[in-house]
Amino acid sequence: MKLLGVVITFLAATAWAGPARKAKPDKFARAAGELFNMATAAEDVNDLKKAAELYKKSLQLVVHPSTIYNLASVLERSHEMYEALIDYELYLELDPTATDAAAVRAHVAELEKRPAKLQFEGGEESDPKEMYVLVDGAIVKRPGDLVRKGTEKVRFELALAGGSHDVDIVTPVGYQGGASSFTAGANFNERLEAPFPHTGNLAFASPHDFTVGPFDNYTNASSHGRITIPPGKQALAVHDGDRECAPILVDAPNNDDTLFIYIKQVGPDDVGATSCRKHDVVQVRLKF
Image 1: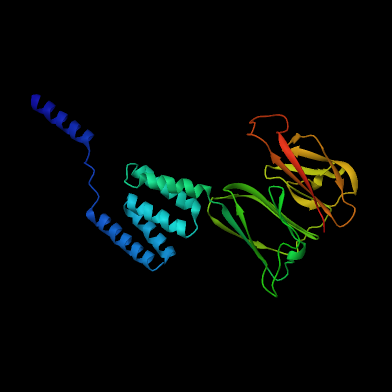
Image 2: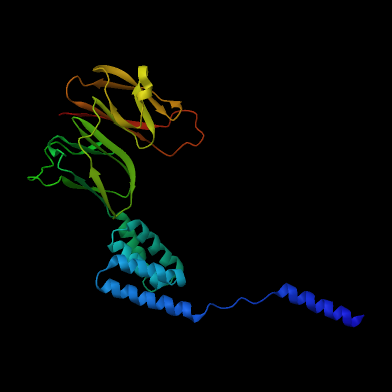
């Protein structure tokens, strides 16, 4: 009986212990090192795309701070700033006491202050002579600021602080616009499609989903768009989701001009609010 008890106790202990986890074979480290060396060779010939791909493959095998840092550097030079900033931060998390940690933190802070570059390119049909460009409700380009040389495409660039911005383009016969988030220091490309299929004496934009429209036909309400309303002084309905806001008083043009309205939320979101969020309204008359 004593022997049986010993055997049972031994078997139970063995079952609970389980097999020990084995260390990762050295071949993974060797393969990661080979990919790392191939990536640095690609960097040396300025093949940044290939270098990024190889660093990422190396990281799939072994996560090493040096690989993360080199990948961040390659992504920065490739103007993929969002991913670059994430990887610089990851490098600092993996090796917070690195000898260059302070310099990397300073570099990240400097990158976050760099403006984003929004580059526009239009086709041959784009006419820059009658084009307004507005950022967050302010005019940054007026008709005549942009000049096409011969048959060249219309090109221009805007410098924007990192964060969310509303960019709108208005011509006598068209409108396009919308809100986007821009990573500091990154390059963004936008194609101008013209002629824009939007006309009307009222254009409006809101990056925070306020909608504007006439009281008698609120089905035309939108956060971005262009419509025709009767000329003269009148009130327009404004909604914040399903919450009604104070109306906007406008003086709609009766000629070829366009009234541009920009509505921006002021302050933080009031979660669960039953009334309209606090906001600012900017009205700009665009003369054509």
